[in-house]
Length: 277
Length: 292
Image 1 (cartoon, each protein chain N blue to C red):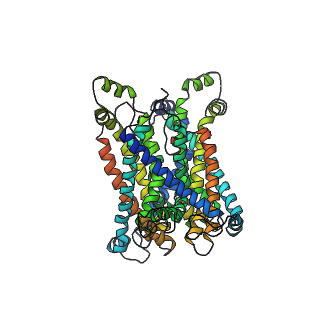
Image 2: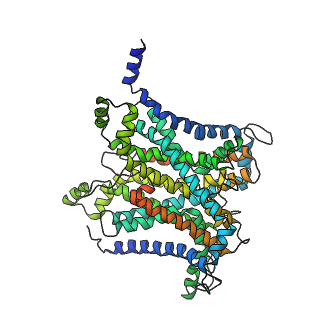
Image 3: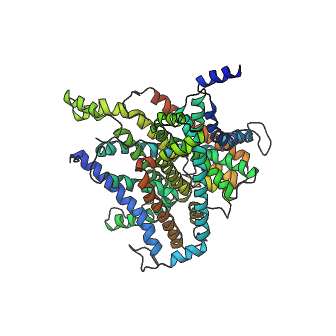
């Protein structure tokens, strides 16, 4: 435990941090207050409070359907990306082989490129084969950054498992299947949970790829929110705010769950737990 | 004969376990490499005829389209730079352990997970002409008329800072905690002042990590799309290149032209990435953490 010393520079830095948080709170709270307000016109606060906008948003934007789609897409993406990504992470963590750097770079590229750049050609291909506009297209598009993400998150977890444990199991007569199911899988549960929850958070929040491939029946919550915002004027501003609050609530629940399994920095990149002093 | 072959391959690391790589490889080839190459070849087959490069010459000869590159860079580069530069002193202050650190980092993760769409909605409410910020400034008589902060350049810029700064901060913080603290203590023992320790020890070790952070923040800012439409001025000062690509594909249904714009976008981004990576490769990347 270390005290933060109060030097002049220190005060400036704290002021900047506080300024950032105050404005952040303003951004989030203004949506929250507006979603509960009756009329809000050129005053500090709405003239009255109501919950009617939530009912309106729920009906007008068919939110039940949208939330079901969101959960279904996210669940499918999580399961598929872990099934495809985890074995690849195992090979990349354990073995050296010719062309490993090339393979690794190919897996890394989808994360380094902005989603729109590969999203437009990808959507074109998915339309050509009839996937886009349906749930399957949305899932396929979202898998593109998710599989590499699972590989990146899982690799350090696999590196931590001592290879001699596997060798010992093989000596005692375990086949490859048994090694994976009885030895590796239980030891990798924390890694699997971490990568699954990270992919879940990213998929629920993924706008661009879902936006490019979704049809009217396969929109996720964030895309539906975008459409309701860009068609502003047709519906009451407050019901858009209510929808935004529902989306925020969903993300916050996911976040609270996620932070039980991973540390905050892992949400942005693959970073090892900081060494304890 | 075949047994020796297998043996020699196994010595180089090629054995049956490599099959585990197959699903992921097929997947990347089918859903990333193939669409990318398909888009590339499509971009050379213009819908309206004309030469192989017709789409590209159409893009670069039309000022309305060509300027989207400059517009995007004008938003993305300053935003990414500000996020990284602001993150360094704050992360430097807050490294190590103190009460409430987990709470602070948790709050910082919130805007990243909220995403640009929600941030845009909040910015419209908060910074709008009758929003809280303008009301405060008006009632304190700091300004006489509401300042315009939405539906222009600044709206998009703020949205990129709100989502990008926490991202940069958390990365810089993790790189800083990767630097061995004994190095700084050794320098202090040898009489280096705080400023000297930062400039001669910490900063050189941190620089590669900063380059990586800048790159990731830049990639985020470069593909700005929802906020450019919602809090920006999508017909003018914030008509970014991703918007041009989107309009070509989904408003004009010219996938060939849209692919060409997407390729230009990827190329511009890769040029910036390459410049930063070349600069980064000239920095020290030793064994003591802090590197990307």
